[in-house]
Length: 199
Image (tube, rainbow, N blue to C red; front, side):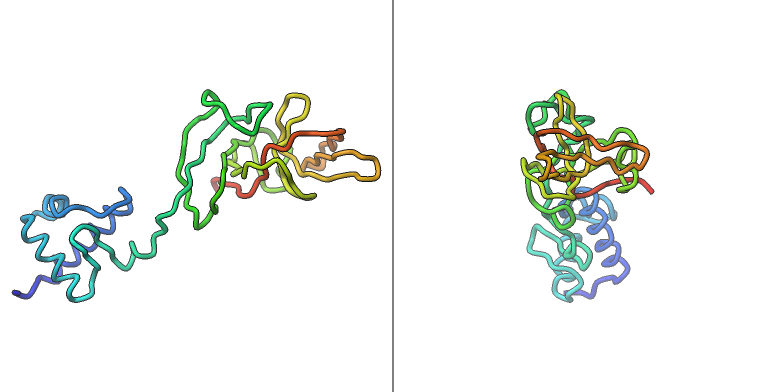
């Protein structure tokens, strides 16, 4: 096999990485040929040579580079909702702004939704108006958890505490200007586990 042009190998490698990052899968030999300005046969021969010299891994379909090997393939689909519909931890389609994929390596696996925070009641917990709060759907929570709670047919995002002596539930806003909401009971719709925000 004739020696291959190192500059062209680097171009193919960089293109394969960028294509994967944008599309979530490897480019075809046709994609590479069109982008680089070479024939499909030349693209294929270069991929084989690059695999032989350890620059990439190529099995005839998938191209793996040092960068793409580190990418996590696992994602979880989540709905972004402006508010949580009351009565159930399930969200209704009309409340869904859009669906997004988030990496399980960061956010974990499970049944989630994303709530767009509204107001300033949780600012001292680092949750500001408009932030996206990742909520794990569950109907139980521990003291100190930030929860989505249903109270009087209204949803609220607050920190949960139990007053066992008085048999009350305290929904604590993380804003010293606001008062606790004290109730006999509430329905827990999920527990906040991450905040996505612009800096």
